[in-house]
Amino acid sequence: MSERVIPVIDHRMRTLAASLPATPIAATGLLADALGRPLRDLRISVTDRCNFRCNYCMPKEVFDNNHVYLPHSALLSFEEITRVARVFVAHGVQKIRLTGGEPLLRKHIERLIEQLAALRTPDGQPLDLTLTTNGSLLKKKARSLKEAGLNRVTVSLDGLDDAVFRRMNDVDFPVADVLDGLAEAQAVGLGAAAPGKPSGLKINMVVKRGTNDHEIVPMARHFRGSGMVLRFIEYMDVGATNGWRMDEVLPSAQVVQRIHAEMPLVQLDPSAPGETAERWGYAGPDGHHDPSLGEVGVISSVTQAFCGDCNRARLSTEGKLYLCLFATQGFDLRDLIRGQGSATDTSPSAPNRTHPLGHAASDAELASAIGAIWQRRTDRYSQLRASLPPDAQPTGGGKRIEMSYIGG
Image (cartoon, rainbow, N blue to C red; front, side):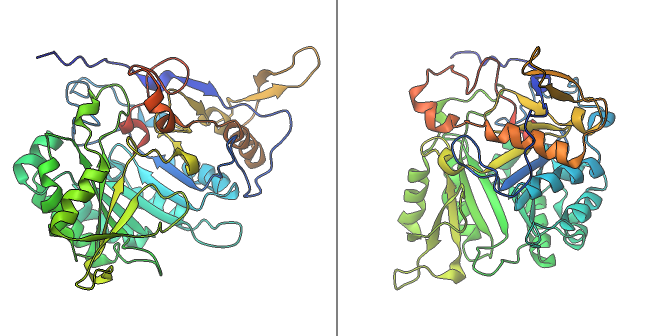
């Protein structure tokens, strides 16, 4: 049996300057990347801390008691996050997801939610504001989150069997407490579905072959007809510390087959452009989808890449912008926000060089910098994965950024 080797790497240092382009880029809501993909979804990590040690995300061997987290002064303040989010919304973002680490560990997170809930798109529409959590603090926080303006919540839950769940979170946390949190979230209205949309309360299960794949059908059976949407995620090669192996990936097609064998399913249309999950509804006696029974989703980022219409950007807790979940480096927006950024030198003697901006970037300058970064975006690692050697990286040198650092 081969020994598992986990590299200890601090990816937070791999960043590029977010410089101002020579020609300003206005925020018109029509921004597109080099492959024609718009910017519609922003995922904001509000903390790099988590109280779980799931081995596919923050394995205890790396994130132990000696692990050094970011100091509070390095984190973007709620006001800074809201300012950046406002600029992203002007560029076309319609959905913001708060993530981590575990976002409910960030003190007074409700204040940030209140600020973000007040933002409006250029045509005056409120944002789709959601949050992903491990559910450990959800029972305590659900009502205050709803009152602050949170629309929806997604809870990570990798099995119903208590022994399996405790083993996967690796801190001996009981599954009953997460289920209580789900019940409270539903009771306060965080599961309310928007018109024409599936339930706003979602459960994400990362499936590892040989670890928790026997929990697929029990999970489907438990949440069928519950008013919640259960989604199964293929175990992904995110980061460099989770010891990912392809033989531990259970293809989503097999997940669907297992459920369908006991509870017939029918495929449903996507609920939104760029949606990552393939939707399957539970069939009634007539063979058609019975909405009262709900649906499941499968996210097939390994076996069926969805890079073609990916419209998501990710902002780390200290203001680094990442263009892909499998990125190796980000762009430093915090320096621009705090007056340490760079501007492009357009003089004939020094083309394409940068010099200190000398002041905190204005909203227009911040929008221009973000626009230039997105316009150059070509990331599509999941589509290319099959043709790459096993140890290849998505872009350039270095190791992939960790999921716990920029969220899933």
